[in-house]
Length: 437
Image 1 (spheres, rainbow, N blue to C red):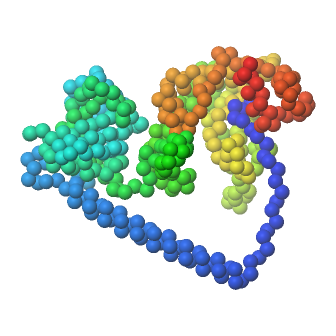
Image 2: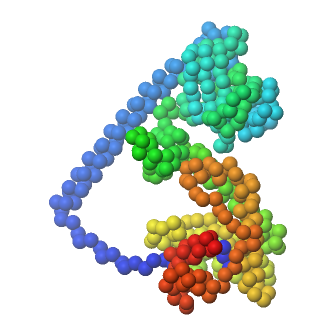
């Protein structure tokens, strides 16, 4: 028995190969390809020159004033200083997520990315520092013998997404801080750039974190916001992964796997690891990625089904696996993926298949409870960019026989074959009926 959902592959008619192009058309295509390549090369060269100019300008603006008596309190960390020389105690750093009012008036050292940089005149600058999805506002204020105006200028000239070390005193403002997760401020005393980002990044975090709903509302109000397309996100995935929604998705995924594993271990299941490079198809109904293995045909595993059943026959009783699954399916739906992480379960049945249903029921309730409890911040971050309805579930999941489900559909005026399978549309309709009732 597997907890992952299967959908039959849609039937398709093989396409006929297109007729060969005339030689003149082939030459024209080659000419267009050369033009496109030259255009792309020119574009990249222009971008390179622009970045070099921006780097030179940034380097000049970030130069430390040697005449400043407080120059040791800020600046770029030299590369040799970043090499491992003396073992450091990571407890010297306070995580941004741990900054709270309980640390008021305490001296802290934090490291993170400069998400927002805003200068207010020549004597003050605000930096929002981000670490692992948490943010805190840091204030650089010119003060005699503490912070110089040159240090304020240096802070204001940092490029966004640079990694910085900040030392300072925690303070608690009287008003709510809307631009950060932590409701405290750090009054900066020292500021060092550990790794400078490019002055001009290909995408901004604010743009990449924007929802389609927000963009559409702005358009209706006559304002045009930047939309980061999928190809741009994938080309610069390392930046796109920093958005709150993507941070939340990966952390929720981590929790799902952890809850799944811990629950099943407590229920007497054994975790197994099955081969993913096999000689033949592991189950029907889905296409296979085929490859050559030292002159012999092989393929990537579509499912651990066969090996799970072997484990049951081998007297393990209850087994599960968290692992990759590969499906070479020609489909563009949210229910078909070429590769995904499968959560698979197999168990022996003493007398009735409801034994399996009961375990899966308890498993899902445990997972939903734990996610609501431990991932509230992550779910909220995902919901801001990708709005969704909060999941509704019962402490004991409703059980319907196939006949009862078919009858509910018929009562709602839906035509359904009482001896056939329920397709995707019918499954959704039945789920809607259950929710309403």
